[in-house]
Length: 251
Ligand SMILES: Nc1ncnc2c1ncn2[C@@H]1O[C@H](COP(=O)(O)OP(=O)(O)OP(=O)(O)O)[C@@H](O)[C@H]1O
Image (cartoon, rainbow, N blue to C red; front, side, top):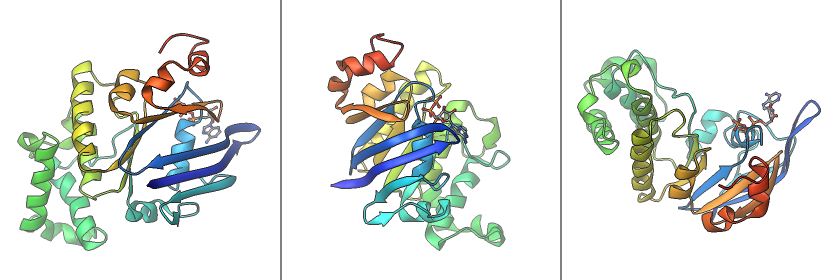
C-alpha cells in the first residue's frame, strides 16, 4: 500500500526550476532512498513534505491527507517525522531530559513549558524515555549533557526523539553525514532495527554504502527531474544514473 504519493510537483526559485514535474510513490514499510548529485533538488523535495516549502503546482498525499499547506507541527502530528542534517536537540539538557520532552508531547498532545516541573516526577514518561534510550544504545549516557555528545551520538539522540513520537513515516536527511565509518555502520544497524517496527523511511543520502545497505527502492533526481527509479540492483546498472554522477563514473 502507498503511504506517500507525490504527483506533478514543480518548484522554482526565481528563474531556477529546482523541481520539475516530480512524481514519487512510496510503499508502506519500505526504505525509499532519494539520491542525486549536489543541487539536484533532494532537500527541496523533502521540504515540500514537511511544510517548509509549498510546491508551485502538484500534490503530496500522505495516505488520504494532503500535506500541501499544512503547518510543520500539523504534519508531525499526522505521523511524519524528520531527522535533520544538523541535529535539533536541546544542547543544555541531559539526554534523558531531551527524550522526555517529545515523549510527554506525544502522550499529552503538546508539551507545555509549565509542565517541565512535573515531568521529572512522571514515572511513565521516565520509563518510556529510558526504554527509548536503551533502544538506540544511549542508556549509559542518560545523564550526560546532550551538547557534549559526539556527532554520531547527537544524531542517534535526535532519531530517538523522533521515534518516541511513533511516526508512520520517517524522513532522514543524510543520516550519516560527517560520521566515521564505525558510526555510519552503527547507524545502518540502528536503522535496520527500526525497520523491523514497520516504520516507512525516506532517506536522502550521498553515501552509496548506506543507500545500498538500506534501500528497497531508489529514486534518482538530477536537475530537479526523476531520471531513474528502481531496486538498488537496477539503479547500479542504469547508464543514465552513471551519467548523472560525474559524467559516467561507476557507483
Ligand atoms: N531557498 C532557495 N532559494 C533559491 N535557490 C534555492 C533555494 N533552495 C534551493 N535552491 C536551489 O535549488 C537547487 C536544488 O537545491 P537542493 O538543496 O534541493 O539540492 P540537493 O539535491 O538537496 O543538494 P545537496 O545534495 O547539495 O544538498 C539548487 O540549485 C539550489 O541552489
